[in-house]
Image (cartoon, helix red, strand yellow):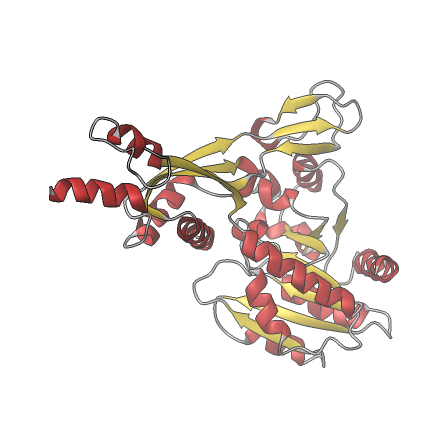
Length: 243
Length: 127
């Protein structure tokens, strides 16, 4: 009898061999592997074009598009930007951006609650990055899901508007921990929202990430915008050096 | 509901690995999911049952091992379990914390029966 053709298998030992065939297969593969490969591809594309890519995340209605509109007007001349907008439905946000003469591509995700690297890649096929310095990718308004998906960005910026309440970072810690920069927006409304404590909001952010930089601003009256613009200008310069 | 996106990634990997290893049926899948992944285990299971229907993993049990968050203080090197996403060093109250555990989102392994084993069982049943 040999070990090759099966002639050593008898009725007496067959069950032992069959047990062997019921086996554990080790995988150790990340479930978002495919997304992460696409995200790296997107990032390489940005770097080829010398583009600094920012992923803007927040809950719905915290002022992402208004911030972008104010940013368009506050940026120093010579810095050119493009925008990718993510929403479940409508072309509204891209239209708002285009009114300012800035190229904008709208991704409508249908039922998906986040942007992923493949959706951004699709949008990039319609967007000429030549001569662009900053690409803003406005993610779907959601404080849970977008945190899990790398889309190829260089930095995550998180908005917390004063109307949402100062404990949002504590309630959505994973999202706030994913940020590189937090912006507390709509500060022009502070006089009307006595429940919101800036000290509590800052402590709430610090509890999830102690070294998180925070800028307070209002897209409406322009307070704090110069700090945000300075951060952008510096990040673009750092990105150009790195690339 | 980004769990659907995660489960479609899971199914893609399972079907590839099953084909490569001559697997006829998968009976259980072990996932490691870190608490920093914003993934709800119950939703993963429900989603998996739906996606696995009619595939090599039809009826397989999805076993999810939830991994807690551990951090290391960059100031004093103390390692500790991070309670309720509160990233503060219990030793020196430092807030610059490196996450050393809790970001996992991967398939550890799966239990499978191979094609030949199933054929053997069938052959025996025919006899």
